[in-house]
Length: 402
Image 1 (spheres, rainbow, N blue to C red):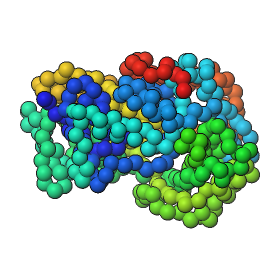
Image 2 (image 1 turned 90 degrees about the vertical axis):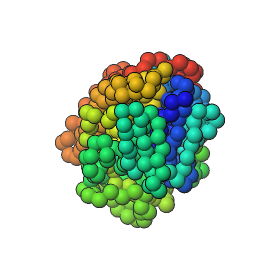
Image 3 (image 1 turned 120 degrees about the horizontal axis):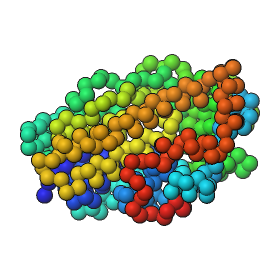
Image 4 (image 1 turned 45 degrees about the horizontal axis):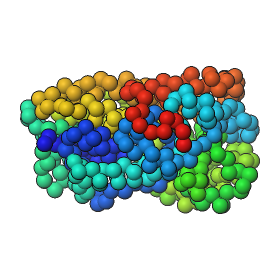
């Protein structure tokens, strides 16, 4: 049986393996770490993510772990003014065919991992870092850090923003450092005053900063993420940050937002990075997926969502595909996903600049613009992203319920 190699065992890599194996192909996943695991930070899942999860057969399992929030709420972080909100309840779900929810990353990762472990056509290998690839007209070989060679008829690079596969395929150097530092903390919900336990994703926007919070873990935990446009030039990943330092970085935060930020502890910092969109994700029998293909800033809350979409599309295109058709099918995948993901990358950058971080007159103009939008206006603005995932309605699932 034909074998596809997937480099990377994160959300995108496991989703790709599942999408491909469900179409009848043998898959080997090569994960560089010593175990298959995922960190517990919170992420948001739009309806397009649930469409993809349904196609992958794990929608019900993720729904069981999700928190279904009532609205996306935009606040002026300095004045405390409620600027705008987008309801996410029945009308939204009916329009887009699935809910909007928040989860811990592990709440998506574990259902994917369990499904991969149970699938007879998926082999999971840890301590298997892919450093480069070689290919001929008929096969491709992933070369591991220890010199081992794993050969198949296709290689999917899902090995993240610093992808070794992308380094060889695109050769575009290090990721672009955004100049923004994000501080993250997760605390038990019981530590949050009851009057502040809002069932919303709430964003407080201020001059060169913003602060987001929402419930995760079935409502048992509170996720806090505060971002500062501080001009950072060096990438940082999960560096511990002192509580006093985090509070000092947000000096103009209004009273309610300040109360919430002060709840955080055991803060960790990341300097956000992305890359410019590229036209070509393929090299013969090799293709990129997820953050290896289109890493994006978190401002559109679509990084994991787009990786899940990639996995569905590449799996369906490789269905009933002979070895001599691989190159053409991967090129079709590239063409099907390139424009949508590039638009999402660039929109995410613009949201950080135009919506979240302006000051003075620009902030007042933003507030007036957002405040003038009705719920229907907002649905229209996000329809291209939340609703049109490129592969139609889900084949299974609960049709948009909880």
